[in-house]
Length: 220
Image (tube, rainbow, N blue to C red; front, side, top):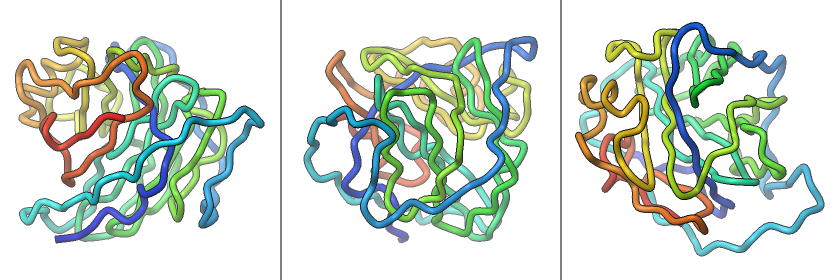
C-alpha cells in the first residue's frame, strides 16, 4: 500500500461541478513549479488553523499505468483542487479537464510520477499548495467552491455528461448534483452518497486512494 505523501499539514476547502460542452473554459496555465517544504500563501490574509490530517491509504488493486484522481478540494476563499497520479506509471495530465458548472479548465501538459500530486488554485483569495506537490501557475477560474454543498469532477475529455470520460468525482454537503448521476453510471460514486460538510468546512481530503466513496473522504 502506498501512502499519500503530498497532503500533510494543509489548509483545506471545497467545490461544485457539471456542465455541457458549450460552456465557457479557462485558459491553461503555462508553467509549473514545485512547492517548498513549507506552504506559502498568495495573500497576507491570515488562514485558519487545522488539525493534523489522517494518513491516506492506497487501494491494493491499483492497476499499472498512469491513473489520476481528485484527492483534495479546498473550499471558499482557500479554493484549490489537488489531483494525484494513483497509477503505477508516470503520465501527463495534459488534456484532462476539471469542471464546475458552468466553467471548465483544461490542464497543461505536466508529467506526474506515480504518487505525485499537482495543485491548482480555483480562484480563492489564498492559495496554499501542499508541500512537495507540483504547483500549476495561474488560476483555474472555476471557483469558488461552496463549503455547504457542491461537486467537482475530473474528465479525460470535454464530454461532461459521458460516463466513459469521467475519471474521478466527489460531492459534498448533499447528493444529487449536476454530474453525480454520470459518476454513479461510471461506477466511481455511489447513488445518494456525499461527504458530510457544513458552511464552516474548509476542505475535504481523501483518506483512501483512489477515492470512490464518501467513506474515503474526511471533511474539515
